[in-house]
Amino acid sequence: MSSIFLLLTLAMTPSDTMTYSAMQKLVPASIRGWQASEPARFYSGREIFQYMDGAGEVYLAYGFSRLLVQRYARPQQEEILVEIFDMGLPRNAFGAFTNMQGRGPAVAIGQAAEYKSGLLSFWRGRFFVCVMIDNENEEATKAVFDLGSRISESIGEDGPTPSLLHVLPQELFELQTLRYFFRHEILNIHFYVADKNIFRLNESTDAVLVRLKSDKSHLLLIQYPSSKEAAAAYADFTASYLPDARAEGWIQTENKKWTGCSVHQKYVLAVFDAVTLADAQNLLATLQRILP
Amino acid sequence: MSESSMTRRDFLRTTAAAAVVGTAGISLLAQPDAQKKANVVLIRHQHVVDSEGKLNPKILEEMFDESMATFFRTKNAGDAWKKIVKPGDVVGIKTNVWRYLRTPLELEQVMKTRIMAVGVQEKDIAIDDRGILSNPVFARATALINVRPMRAHNWSGVGGCLKNYIMFTPNPPDYHPDSCIDLGALWKLPAVEGKTRLNVLLMLTPQFHCLGPHHFDKQFTWAYNGIIVGTDPVAVDAVGLKIIEAQRELFFKEDSPMRPPVRHIKAAEEKHGIGIANLAAIEIVRLGWKEDSLI
Image (cartoon, rainbow over all chains, first blue to last red; front, side):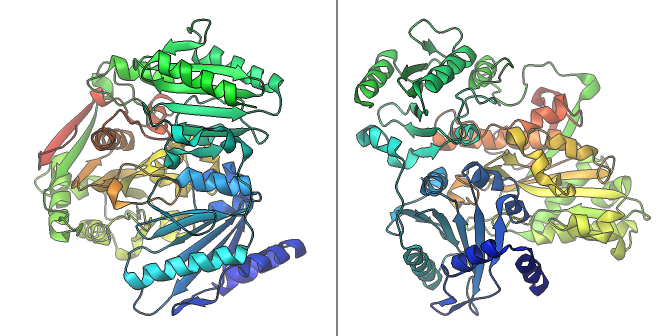
């Protein structure tokens, strides 16, 4: 263990050392009788695969920068595992949180948090944080919450949520179904569209996927840097996904539900699996009216 | 976008055309090919996991022994092991230690005991997961046993026997693109090719849904109380996938394909040629508890 820690330390650049040092200050040495049981471990960029396998791709798709892993032990008690993901930007941290959103009830830690079955996840500023135990008991659960609160306080500053969110009328969708992202791999985790990136998603785009309360259809809203890029993405999507659609851009797909897409200035809007054509068309028309 | 793209509509077409047998990611429409047919044993026991989730090791051992004897058509499990392991073999048991849903230690020990009973020396047997590349026994292994639980996975759709071998590569991210579609290629690595004698996919309490990289929730597991045994990792995974997709449909009360869709099982057959993914070409020998078998 100590040799691993030494190697990590030697591999750090001076600036990394500062950063790791700053991250280390986000976690307390002890909480409610639990003590840090080993030196914190740090992983930067693709080193995340030394800590987790394929799941690391999810964090990389959200712009992951570095990870702190700290374990806490207390005799006769559950081990507590803390993971602090420095996602580089608040939007990335928010996205990583929404990727897991919907697991359980919301709790008041950080800018948004959920807790269920021993796992507390929250985001604040540019950090996404998980605090977890394998088996719940009252004392360990309290420690998880206290630890989360302490880390949130140490982070100190909130970050802005992506402006695209403010465009969406919140009464239309279930908040827990909201996913924010900018890579097609994440879109495909939550709603598989195509193996290729036919919406031309990238780090300069913002995308939100929600599930509507009315008919459980999926609404995808993407903001591009320019209307030209939005038009190109719209053309790609319709050519690949809706080649048999009528001119209005709607098709009843093989599951007997309706899918359609429209472009409005620098926005592309798509509805998947609407129950009726009229409802889906009304939705997109409404959104187009309120988009900037 | 000059290159053609596989879209969700392609999956919907497959599902619509094969509504009765459904599994969107796997080609069910092909006719059974007698030349390529695979076999698996699916064994279940109502009490191997109790209502509180506690494992009964004795029942698990009996189930496993019965499945081995049935699959290899022998009088007992000991004779079955003699068909796949010889006294001079060096055996690596590739297990899975994911903290929330690991291969039961008791089953690992049963395997080790059965292998030793064949005549393999204890020093020539190793049980490992994340350390296999630095494990000296695995380095000189002549035979591999592959065992792990089935679960939903946030990047590959599911983690089964095929994915369990990702630790055989020093660079797992090489196999991550396109929802890990090329996991079948792992089976042609020098450390692996031709060595696997048995694949055991544990369906005791499979996880059929996940939200995020860490996600484990007992709400998304159920006591299926089964084990799938075979020599074809693709067939074993295809059967396991069909079962958890059926459970998703029951649970979510709507068509709810794996997210992301599972592409590596079909590709393991069609692209890498290491087994059979087409359920219509897989013979499933069913033993034990039949209720709610979902397949």
